[in-house]
Length: 155
Image 1 (cartoon, rainbow, N blue to C red):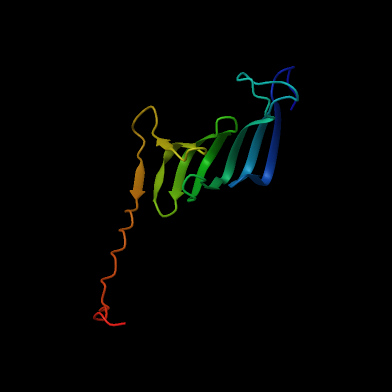
Image 2 (cartoon, rainbow, N blue to C red):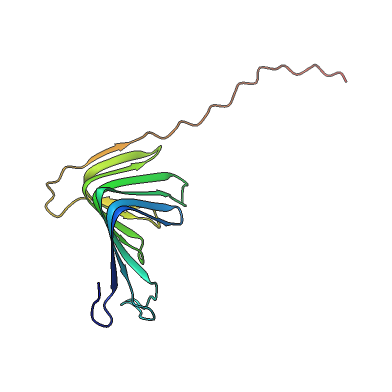
């Protein structure tokens, strides 16, 4: 889709869309990809060509092995709007996020920072229900009791 000079280049994909960036992978029925025109900086002075991706359908799925804690995070939503420059993914509609071994979230809106792993939920009306399940931390293992007797003195 062509625009005027300086407008982002836009590409639309339909079908079984699969995108990968490092440990992050996304699947969706549809994707709209926004890129800066070659040699043109965005408002922040960045020359990165891929600036934003909007995923929808089937539902849209995102997964990442987060570098900070090496934990797998999976997310499903009606729409995932990912800002490649900031690393922020805005998930909307029937959102399910699972941090494997830590907990899960169900709601209508989630802001996920793919750089830090931070998540924020809620909407402006304050009426949308949010369901969160947190897994308890594993208890540290108790040291085994010393059951062996040491020999008396001799060599």
